[in-house]
Image 1 (cartoon, rainbow, N blue to C red):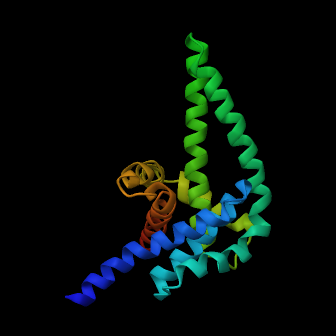
Image 2 (spheres, rainbow, N blue to C red):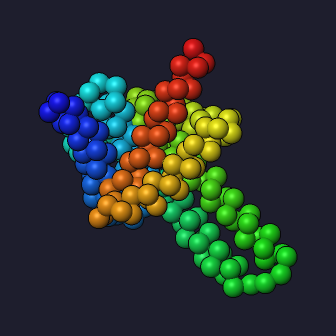
Length: 194
């Protein structure tokens, strides 16, 4: 009975520790994508190999991902700032044109969130791959199946909302739970195709 309780706590503690490491790495604002891929790396090792050193695993993964993913992360951070400023401007406008542009921006943000979550999962599952290989895998994971893309987007939206009941929950679990969902979806996809 005690062993099951400890195993259950491990299932909670490992994503929390990965979220803490992610938060530390994201103190440099543009470093979020390599940090998210490092979370995918650490949680993938935890799920497949039983490696419980998740906090250190995120920093180990960071060393693998920061060079290939940092330029992409910087570019997307600038694009996100532009998209948020456009959304703020369009929310104050009226008329059908403003509504159409607003909804286009919302759709682009949703597609970007889904794709970059899938990119972190693809990089985390294949740390020895290349950035272009991760991008192809992420595109396939995010956009070639409606249920997969919906699961990724749903997890990215729901995890921060449902973790609000825990103090610092969105900070610690808001990114790690969607990555875990992405890892499960990727594993299920791999089993289904093989």
